[in-house]
Image (cartoon, rainbow, N blue to C red):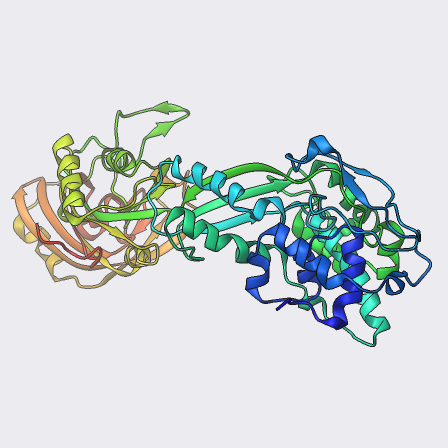
Length: 527
């Protein structure tokens, strides 16, 4: 059954005679059934012609507008939808009879997108690009970008529909028009699924992006910039102010009478079909998490670069992420962790939680055994670090790690030096201090990258081990975010109280180890 009603026949005839394709006529007439759009373009064209056939005397146009001439394609342009169509008069007895466009003429609303670019031949070309891209995927999401002038043309066609329906006492809503992007996906999603053998899924991490352009009509939007200049502001990474959102904003603002003075209604038929600017495949980021131990006192967590000059040859980040980057065939990565240690601080115990975001990975499917082998490869590559509990995680799970940065506790071991000679009894009182509150002004050593502030932190407990008259080992359990070195030496009075002030002596820290980071994430795995 044909989807258009008798009541919409007059509007459909006007649109059809002006050069609008069947699918756009369906959209403008509010046809929201998927099936009619999916039929081949040529069949739709023929069926629409039959639907619109009426007695000759009914074809007389009402109103002062002259009839549109029939578009006849050049014979040598039949095999190329980019060929220009020539205007020619129809050989009819009455010049007021509505003539019909060729099934190969370019639609004056969608500029050919719902014609040539919905057919199996084009879908096959896109899928060929997908299959040679080297990505692993089990589903896909289609992203399409249309020229902004399509919104202007659709608006013009809609005003015609509104006007003609109004003559019949009908008041169709603008929201009744089926969006071009929606109709395009109705048609193409089944074709992509059939060709690639995977479902289309709006939540898929694998995205196939198709960008369309139509140079011939690029100036269709320009009058809006004069009528509604406040809608068009320069934006970063945008080559033109005439973005789709800006155009839509202007169309919502402009008065109908002002629009009709500036733009033809219905829109003029183009000579050329749209072009494809690019077909791009991308995969959403995947996340790998684990815990790392750092055994070197000469290794920064991240690359140490000062004034463009690298200070050390490697880092924890690179020793881990370089292997992941290669295994996942990703373009780049972002490394994050639950806190960080200084270059001369070791991280012992069960390690520090970390996560690596792998951007645009081409390989994403790994068995648990393959991940385990990847962990072993990382551990064999260096004696400066070790990784455990390596696993794939979700983006949402990263929140557990970040919560731990401020909310959890951390345990440290520090080798402390004192200026005056001490005995065991001189340090024993530290063992009795519980939940000691300290105020720490941003340390001098990090002031170049942290804002100046006073932060209150808690030293939950301390335990001392006497070594000799100038040295003792101090074990601390503290609130996350505590600057341990400054708590020991005082940072010229910027941390109060500190070990030096508590002992009434000058104290300094010679070695510092992170013994544990009490964040229960990621989940521990069996070796």
